[in-house]
Image (tube, rainbow, N blue to C red; front, side, top):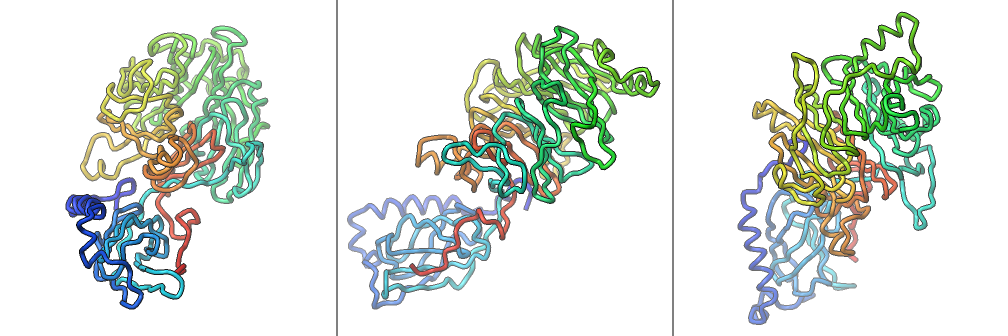
Length: 508
């Protein structure tokens, strides 16, 4: 099974759907009630399970179980699959219609009919081939009834906060270290190995400016922190700081951050992943993108005459502007370095800028998804898609693309604030909704936002997500769910996960 996509093995799905349709109608047809197969449950007769379809599938898969003496009252029928309680939709005497629950790993099907001393329990002779799928979970954080849980470092089980807009970034030298940089806050560290949250970097270490992004040099020795301020005027306000890694491999406020670049109102900075030490940062002032050569900085530092703020003014080149003044945007580098996506947060679209390998710089960009000043939620291709405050994105290798030998092997996943979802952008410019906006939750409260974990589209909901990171080794996404006050995950179901549903083995 592919990492990010379940193979389409269910060639019989169309006839099953048609059967469900007919089944649903027949349950409402008064004429069918005279059929012996729809007589009420008879405690004096045995309950039998003879077959079920489909034989394989994942959570929320529709299933029909065949047998005898199921009765016609859903309140008397309980079904467990893999020890998890299934939702029974309808019963028709010799068959019943249900949904496969999450976490039904063993696949054992048990049907219970009746109440009290009249309950009969029967186990199907064949097990359902349960196939794991990607689901949304919660890693750490919580929101209480009054939303006054505050900020608490410590074990994942008790940590709290995660409430400001921000971005996520993995440490390239310590892949179990995930940093969270908050737009109006400090920089937190999630130690995924030891399951601990700490705050190693305070906002005060960067002049109490608004923190916008973090990135790392290609060798992992330095961290770059972009800040947003206009306090010193055009060409002089801090834009990007550089921070040396401590001897023990950590980063901290005592690491003596130094100013790397100064213009004004920077929204983010990124390094080219192949050509070492090319730094690209931007400005909200006129939508500019600047290029800075980090080698020049290190050469100056090595001479011993610089490591001071005055070096940071004018040591860069303006490449282009993206559209107009006051465009808030972030730059995301493709792993090959061939191009970068520019997410324009406050104008609801995504640009692409292609890299010129000869000149070693990026070219003026063009729109690949969404439309300027046209917020909305609509999946589609290119400018027909609608986005609403996309925030941070991450490139993820698609195994199917690798197998097919495509030139571009990566999809781009991004967190979108106002649609409460995680979206996906393919190399061809097709936008789809990957996770969030769970349909079952919407049916209950009519909201697209929520805090439910589970199936990516049927159940899971987010509430104003902004940050996203991806760990290729574990095939796990991490999401900063700001109003939910949590760090959420998207990963493959695990048999020991507590959030896969309540075990229901009783006959009650």
